[in-house]
Image 1 (cartoon, rainbow, N blue to C red):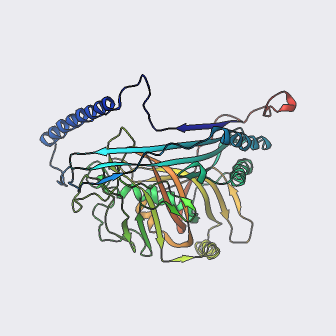
Image 2: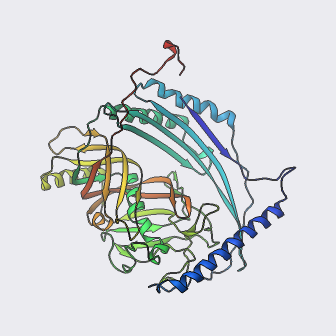
Image 3: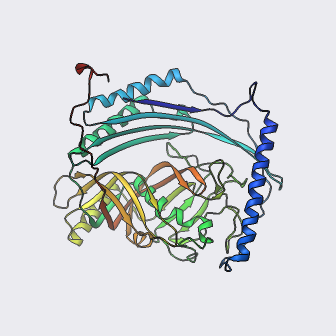
Length: 460
């Protein structure tokens, strides 16, 4: 069993370390040299490349911002948390089908500083705390069976109570154990329900990345929605807002909030889609045709270059029904299409998408827990080995209803500007058609011997 812990404190100054003024000078010099190199490349490109379709400026002028909040020290106790982690991870020993597992706690305090020639002077920060519960088994055909749960909050004291974490550990272990006996999915096209958290990932991957501003200007991008402003891109009962100012949804902390983006622009809510109609894009300080200003979504991992990125994605629906009614509608759709079953995606772990013009405009979402839902009254059946695949424009047209209860998916999104924290909140979606394919099976067989225990001379 494994219990991991990682804490990150703000950088400080101690004897023998470089003075803060010298470190700031080094960083300023590094950024200046990188900027001059980039300027040379840009000037060269304008001389040797064909004219671009979008000739917007490279950088927008924004008003100066002044904000100061003191750096808050990290509050964390190893003495308090280590026994909890050991207790939670030891729970996996009760489940022989679990071959590898971990309960990890990550706690970090992030303080950011920005000064620019426009007069902005900003010091702000926030905390991150995360419990990650993961486990893995191996089916008889060699397929790896992963399962996980996670909890995110601004600080460790806002994480769930001990009993809730223990219940999540047990849930993860049961998911692994149950899927070891579950049948493999067959390739399938038919109706399905995506739970709220699954739908959040669905929107993040196939919609959110395609409305990031810099992708509308880059000639190498597919530019799925570049010419769709004031046109329908989603069903008319759906609206989508990105709101980095929102810290919570219900009792759940949102991972994608911040006060100022990484270019010193104040965070603000941005309604991208209203009643199915695309209104704008997520903008950094890199203008595009028709959108000359930032709306506070220039983001990056420290050390990377800023581009437009997602924050808190919030899906709203005017065609919402109860979960029970949504399930009944799924069964009606199964019968109408004369399908043997529909699918229910309870949990996903993430996904990826390709947006480049040279590749396929496609996406893949990786589910963890999937059920077949039968219209003839048979019990729901857990299946394994499922990947959701598709193309964005076709997928949006298949949404016909939602539940009335949003759920949150908190995660870390990786793209050109590195990894940034994001959230996606959505009600469950009913789609008339979704395509799934089978994940590849592994080549290694399950272990020939049972896991060592204390009774056989091993340790738990």
